[in-house]
Image: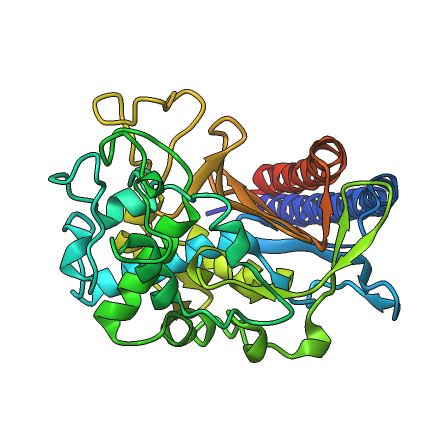
Amino acid sequence: MKSTKELRILILSCISLMYVNLANGQENNYVQKLRANDLDSIIQENMNQAGMVGIAGAVIVNKKVVWMKGYGYADKEKKIPFTPNTVMNIASITKTFTGVCVMKALEEGKLSLDQDINTYLPFKVINPNFPKEKITLRNLGTHTSGITDREPIYSNAYHYGGDSPVSLEDFLTSYFDQKGKYYSQENFLKQKPGTYWEYSNIATALAGYIVERVTRTPLNEYSKKNIFKPLHMNHSGWFLSEIDSAAHSKQYDKQSDTLKQIPLYGLPTYPDGGVRTSVSELSKFFIAMLNNGKYKNDRILKKSSVEMMEIFQFTENSKPENINLLTKNAGLFWATKDGGKKIGYGGTDPGVKTEMLSDLSKEVSVILFTNTSLNMKDLLKYYFKGIFDELFKYGCSVKAPQKKLN
């Protein structure tokens, strides 16, 4: 049994330790505020140099948002601020939503990742160079299907001024059916499915269409039920007709010396790039994916489904011939970037640049939107190195004292 003196020493030690931890916490908060203030000037300087009209971003550390802010304008003419709640199309980050829908249909027993996709389709998708080789959803999800985005067919499918009047089904039928308006042997690579990596938007659109076929539900409605509603993404959707126009950003082009406004647009292949959301609502989705399918008390996928989606698909014994595993790999509708050091997805479309990336440990993550197209030089210098990398560094600085205190 401890003496009264020993007990007093123990109590005083505990109190001292408590105050030290409190002081450390206050100091860390102060340092974080200083760094956040630095971010303001860094972001504004890079925006000004590049001519970006609006930006919003979020930093996520250990699956919690630690910083979120917007800068510039969603509508420059009307001086409407660009905020974390501003809605815009997120381009190819959309593919991760389509991937979740594929995995949800898989959970429901309605499809298989390794079945011939023709099992699910009303028209045949056959590479004329390899007519006996099957194409699978796994191929579609890893960009190894052998389907290519033939130009100018794909680019000309963008409909400026509103949602596309051409349906997903009609576009895909015209592209893949041998009697279709856009059918050509050039819609396919001269490599067998699974043996060659080439990014394909139309392949992802086809995956989304398969979900529609097997669930008998339009993809926008299926994702609303299984993603948007559970995550309370109340202002997100796929089509302009689903979005409050007052919340939607205008889009701009600054690839030359002149800033141009781009009319809002839709595309028939909407599963490859049509989701419209905000930084604040996308943060919920990303946290759910980093947290094995769960955001707070809401679950969108089973843990096993998320693991299957995010696990690297390529190995030394099974990889496309043009993939170097030291610099690149792929999940299912999930990508690696930055030389294989980050996971998530990015998107690029007219008037749109978005990134949603995490380190491989899922400890530090960054989401970044801009409503302005830039030339490649400015994109790399100001958007990526100037802003995205700084946000990632900030996330790492927040993570370090958290680990020390734990």
